Length: 255
Image (cartoon, rainbow, N blue to C red; front, top):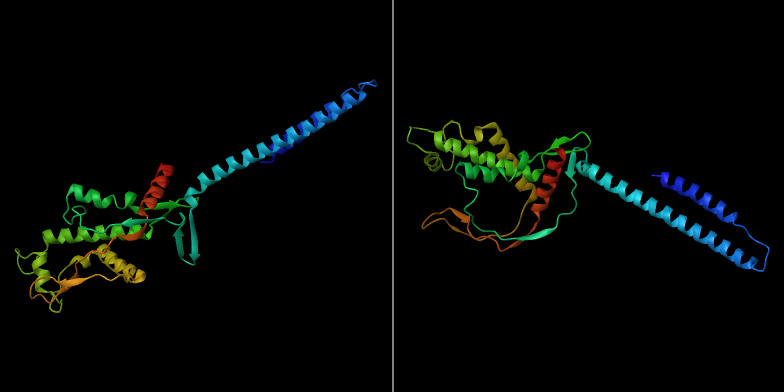
């Protein structure tokens, strides 16, 4: 980074030697020659200094760009002991309309599975630091867990019986609604990974404690069970697309 300074210092010395050696003739034009020599000296100094500043600025900009590109995988920091965050800067906000969708169904089909998998590209793993250490950001962890629970539910919807071969998971759930007399048979939460995900999502929901109020009503005539049925109005959210863009950049760098 300091090499341009050395080169320009040598250049300045050579130019000044030339100017200092400019022949000053004792004649009626002595003052003219003297003025020209002084002017050349000033121009040379200004030119060399300008070139020096340009080269230093150019070198620093290139070093900065190189460092920025090299540091894109080191964008994480420790908040406290054992607590780290993927540091991609403050996320901008966007308006999100909450509504029903025909996408992200529960059933397991190639198109449905592809939609869910696209929510956590590359399994949601980001590799950070000079040693490309793998991490799973909480956002992708939660989305991945939703998919794991979905697949566990689908698997048992298709295969589980509790009294006879005709009993479905829905029938079992309705029969043991309060779970007080539920038999000791495998359920969705008996899958170790699904059980982990169910507990993890529970903890994340409690941790974030969203207190927005939503309207509720009975699920049907005479049904004592009530549930939130009205969707919220459009609300302000963090722009999750920025997170996906950053993950894509990391994946490209990793090849």
